[in-house]
Amino acid sequence: MSEKNWSGTHEFAASVLHNPTSIDEAQALVAGAERIRALGTRHSFNEIADGAELVSLVNVPPELTSDGSTVTVTGGTKYAVVANWLQQNGLALHNLGSLPHISIAGATSTATHGSGSTLGNLSTAIRALEFITPDGSLETMRAGDDDFAGAAVALGLLGPIARVTLAVQPTYQVRQDVFIGLEFSALLDHVLEVFDAGYSVSVFTDWMSHTGSIWVKTRMDVSGSVPDEIFGAKRESERRNILEGNDNMTVQGGVPGPWSERLPHFRIDATPSDGDEIQTEYMVPITDAAAALSAVHQIAAQFAPILLVTELRTVASDDLWLSTAYGRDTLCIHFTWKNLPEAVHAILPLIESALAPFAARPHWGKVNQIQPSTIATLYEKLPDFRRLVERRDPGFKFRSDYLRELLGLRDEPRGSARPTLDSGNRPLGRR
Ligand SMILES: Cc1cc2nc3c(=O)[nH]c(=O)nc-3n(C[C@H](O)[C@H](O)[C@H](O)COP(=O)(O)OP(=O)(O)OC[C@H]3O[C@@H](n4cnc5c(N)ncnc54)[C@H](O)[C@@H]3O)c2cc1C
Image 1 (cartoon, rainbow, N blue to C red):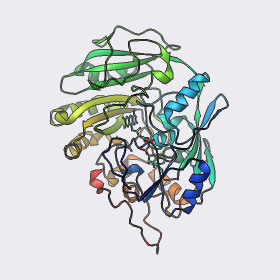
Image 2 (image 1 turned 30 degrees about the horizontal axis):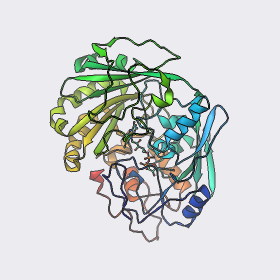
Image 3 (image 1 turned 180 degrees about the horizontal axis):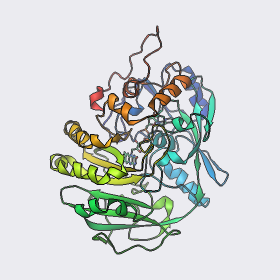
Image 4 (image 1 turned 60 degrees about the horizontal axis):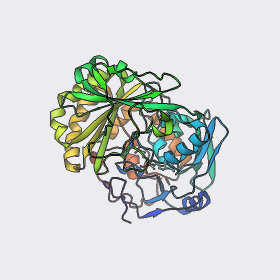
């Protein structure tokens, strides 16, 4: 098989990719496979989705039902489809990531987040998950069940998610405004206030020009008024792109519109971000935000030549065991790199060492070199998660070498022949 991820930067080592068109078909495939892992819309940048065989549920036709407080949807469905359907039915999600192109199950499995100091990541909206178990049957876990907090961000290790139930609320309108000219020193002095300037706030910077832009998404039902200036950054009336030359952004300029068309940065009908890129992101406690930003700023000259842009966002604390915001309100420090793998891998240790004092957690689906010994110190519920994986997948059907090593999962069952897995994967140092 010769299949790559969305950015073309990872070639899957799996021997086969199955594309069932129904949940029944996916169940039969799982039941018959020795080793199989779920693949979503392939927007992760590392080996997280790889395995001996892959099954993608993105060709299963979307099935959507709602009782008014939740929506239940097939796991391979893209956020764009769910968001449009909810909007047409007068409903909304609490937040979205920067792009609506990703699948619900794939995004929530890695704790994908948008921005918002009071908003949990996308996994915190999950109210139930229907898994395909190793024998191919369906089993539902609901919020409040034992171990649910471990299942909500499971990196595919509990099997393909056939259906996801998410919390919804009445629809709302959002306006999006861009403020230009935020001095880096002003950001450091007022970091919490900057991120409190709207429902969802992002700061973009290249670190070197010492100024950045603030993108503020304001909920019209909470506060329709937007200032002309935020700590010296001026509200812009002209349309801005995150990356110059890529006209792929949702509507700005303070024009109110449905949440589904303002919360993502990127339009569904355009290629998000750049396409020819690598991404990296680290999450630190918001209480360390200024210190962590200063630490990265000090080394910025060394990585600036390969950086396309940095985005800073916030996420509210949650209790999901493998969530990158577990137990702490979080600042997310993201890097969109030029597609220069060697240069990116050469610079990551420098950034990771600058952020080590802040117990930085890497995004599960983005490129990093954080070692398993460090991961073990970053997630206090990791031992519980390992036990959950053992219980739900005792035959190791949903495991890969990559995740086994990264999370310190038990090795193969004694006496079993070890299949050649992930033969094309890079060593752990090249995560
Ligand atoms: C342009 C771009 C912008 C991005 N913006 C953001 C952002 O704003 N915020 C953010 O946090 N991240 C962002 N990401 C990263 C992205 O959201 C995550 O990597 C996400 O996991 C990708 O979802 P996917 O459907 O492509 O899943 P994949 O990358 O295909 O898979 C990711 C994980 O989910 C598992 N999985 C997939 N489908 C299923 C299923 N049906 N059942 C069980 N497990 C499954 C896989 O096994 C794997 O472990 C961005 C990525 C790109 C390329």
